[in-house]
Image 1 (cartoon, rainbow, N blue to C red):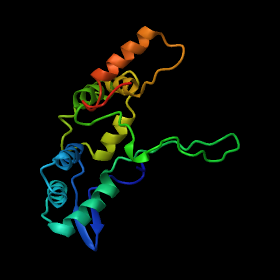
Image 2 (image 1 turned 45 degrees about the vertical axis):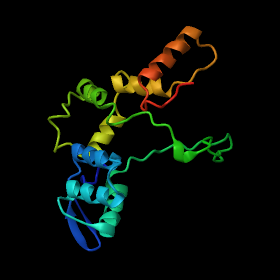
Image 3 (image 1 turned 135 degrees about the vertical axis):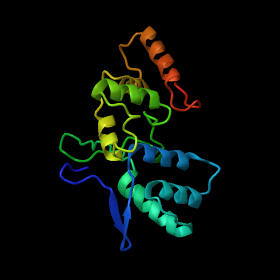
Length: 190
């Protein structure tokens, strides 16, 4: 996101101009479609494009265009900080399996907490912003929520790992809170 660029409302692809609705609620509807296990990949692409572009596409054309739209305008980048040693050399990643990164927020499961955090921090009623608040604005505001909001506290709980010096009672309480706020029911807390 660059502050001197306008928010995307249209784009050009293969010499064709498309209007695109990137309001946060429309993007969240597309995420719901992507999670529907009853749909085939090309059906997901077709439905998502109809939601965002209000046009009908089919088959490979839909898949290629959807992949472009998702990568360019929707995808949530998981940027990891680059760790360097004392001499400034890039350190190897500590993650054994980079494809299996732990998630600390779920836009559906955490919806109530995200809503209340936006109200608390910004005075924004997300229901009133449906169809208005752009996806990039939503992402920026979500990422910038202060630490005293409920969603940031839940993220801190999910990220917590036991360390030396913490009491047994504190560790047990944090593990209990991690079970309560686990994103997946199958997620286990060690």
